Image (spheres, helix red, strand yellow):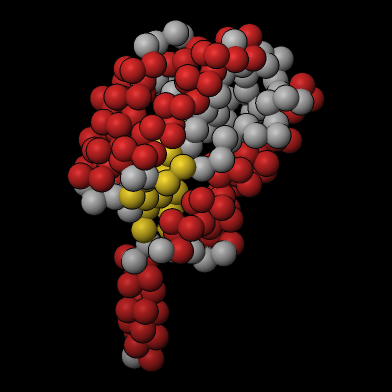
Length: 203
């Protein structure tokens, strides 16, 4: 009888804690899918570990796919939201679009549509800006980077620091392709995103 009573108390008190866990969805490309490194060492896994350690009440779902584009993510986003029902979505997209030479206007509109889908569902979003390698030219890269400021302003959405800030310019922190960061760079990637994300989590 005492055993049953203790079991009831444990279940009764533990279940609400589990039920109250919010969901953070990461919608990204290979940078968030831990391309070329063990997935448990990627910045998203490090984020999940930090959230657990700090008891912030979120579970992390990583829906990032290597090679993902804004149109690809937009196509599958509504189903993800319906299934996962996230309170917060990190959008780390656009790099593959730029590398493939997609029209800048198209990239911007896709990101606007993605943010709109997130907002219409009642979720909040953090937009992670991207940059292209230097060989794409300064003028084009500036126009590409302006997409994220435009989307942030038009959609009133938070914008983080560039995820490869203080990383991309150091060859030792990049894989041989010059595009994807090595394992040692993942903690810095998290630190680049964390301040803006923490502000949203704390709201």
